[in-house]
Length: 272
Image (cartoon, rainbow, N blue to C red; front, side):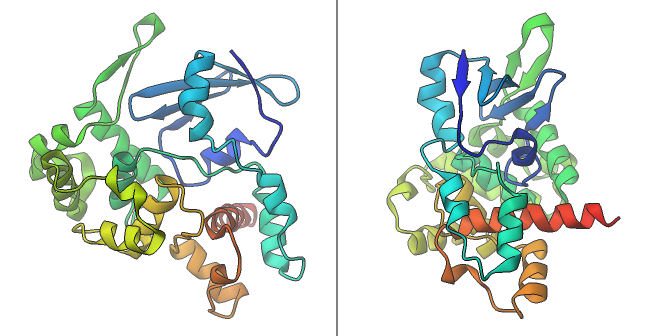
């Protein structure tokens, strides 16, 4: 099918924005794996994209996944002009959207992300998927793998998870898998909680601190006022805001954080 997306939508920037780790560039465009769902997107002319799904699948899943009901251009236009760094970050990050992803996948992924860089996170996630995810047969006989279920990871055991290069995070992932598999942690039920209570509920899980909780809240539950602070964002806060977190003063803090994260990493790459 052909999709028309007139608002901010830059697939390369989205892939590099550190919010999803199963996006891959293909000769024709980009591949997105989300849970057990697979999408190929090929840019066309103007604002059009060829999508490897039915119109029903696009509207029923991928439209929400890409947060296409939100006007990101308007959010960029509303950035206060007196904040020079944020203005520069908004320009650099134009095209990034907050992906609305599966809560279970985000919980595991961001537990794994602690003290790991993006390539290492991607490698760990793919190893988990290859070993414990359901196969997704592709044309030509190629096989990709869905994100593993909580039941599959709970049955794997701690040592098997350590063998996937999870290190000290293995017992955290195992505990989360056991809690979800047993029904002790109902991730769907957390959807109804206000932001503060959602963060509190997530942080009750072993190995989940405020940064991981904010990542899950933003990227799984679409809580746009939750702004994760990692080493990149802390460096921005220290260097450009005198150590004072600027996000409480603005709306859509999670989106602003993504622009800053992308801009800070891009600037470092540029000056290498």
